[in-house]
Amino acid sequence: MATKRASSAKKKRLLISDVYARYLRHVEVTKEGTTLTSYRQRAGVLVRLLSEVCQLQYLDEVEVDHLRQCVQRLQAMDLGEITEGRRRGRVPVNGSYAVETVRGYIRIWKAFFSWCLEEGLILVNPADPRFKSPRPEDKVKVTFTEDQIYKMLAVFDTSESLGFRNYVILVLLLDTGMRLSELEGLQFKDVHETYVKVHGKGRKEREIGISPEMNTLIWKYTSQYRMPKDETVEALFLTRSGTGVTDSTIKLIVARVKQETGLIDIQVSPHVFRHTFAKMYLGNGGDVFKLSREMGHSSVQVTELYLKDFGSAEARKEHTSRSPLANLNLKKQHNKKRKK
Image (cartoon, rainbow, N blue to C red; front, side, top):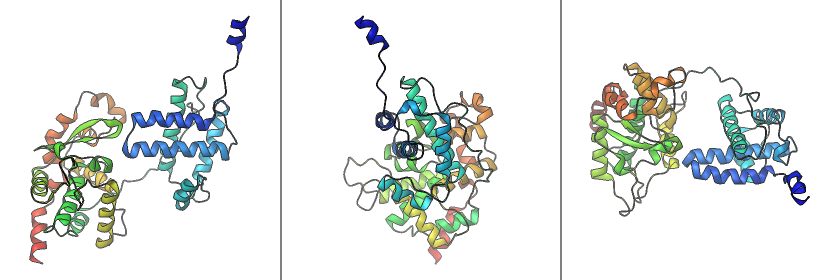
């Protein structure tokens, strides 16, 4: 009788907030850097929306229509109040998110419920195929022109250490198309004569080719200006105090470039350098499959099967002839600056 009663006993209901806390521990093991931050913040918004919009406390109460209500509220959130909302633990209201931002939230919400299903915490996934993301906006990705690139690079005084460091950082973004987090995590030992090793999303290591001129610039920086605080500092790019630069430092560098060049009609960010690299690489005759590997993309939709057997080490072999630096005359730009 005791066995029968035990088998028929109901499981204890799980609070969404408790499951979220356990999910964060899972994320901390499997994610890192900006990806970890994104998962923590966006899954946290879901927990708040389920509570405030749907008045739900328990995981087994969540249905697909509740998630649709959360998306509607998310689309009405005020971007100007996001930071304040996070700090106070409240969901900001009014205003709107960009469609791509909303899609990014939904991807993480779906990942959360998929994990719940895998862990046996729910019997049915509410984020099933009926829970759809809004259609992506059909936008042309913003990229820089050659003239804009020259203007930005001319901002730095390359005769002093920080000016030269900042110059090399921007040229490296252009030459490789690497992500901001990958640049921040780049170490001195990751630099090789024709390529650099980066740690991308999902902690996946890959190789990105660098042009001969890029290699020379990095060598000059490391041999003349890179002064680590002590031997434990492994970062490639350092602050004045000898510690590794952070993503905030790089963003400030790019913000200064935008301000001093007066490029108000175009977004200036590390990601736009990534877009520019991709566009100029293809414009120089580069192969889209090789480009996908260098940029660390997991697939190219329809062509995904062709990419599985192609590694980044092979992709980088054509990097020099495809890089944006193949078109730009940086030496000429250097000489102009010296004459002034």
